[in-house]
Image (cartoon, rainbow, N blue to C red; front, side, top):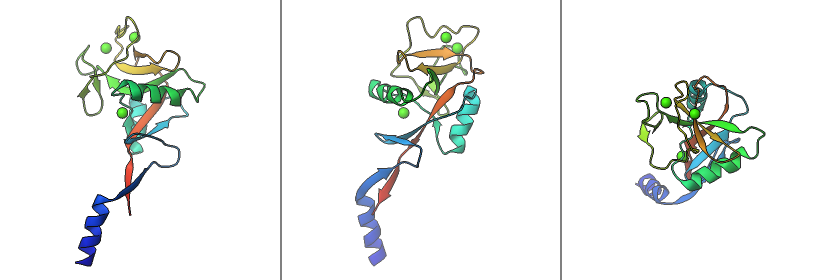
Length: 150
Ligand SMILES: [Ca+2]
Ligand SMILES: [Ca+2]
Ligand SMILES: [Ca+2]
């Protein structure tokens, strides 16, 4: 009985949220900027190994936050989780296949140059490009923040 009451209280009182060491909190997520370069698919795998996914950017605020993370590095171009691999020209956030609502493609992009199917973001102009999936780039992982209950 007493345990039941304590559990009910715990479910309603959220004291805070937390990200693991090396991850930066923003809204409901934690973000990690990879130090190393990988192909898009290996970047996604590495994110998954760490309980996350290549970052999805769902609005202009998140885009600004991601850019601020990239500005702490010397690199210009980073992998994020978008792909039009399944159906050419239909962009989704992998691995769940969520359709793009917000986009921030650079002028004339995506251009599918030599069959580009993976999404990168540039620190310099904050804009997106479809990119060669085999290109090795640094990448941004995202995961939900763990909720801490007391
Ligand atoms: Ca996101
Ligand atoms: Ca494409
Ligand atoms: Ca392109």
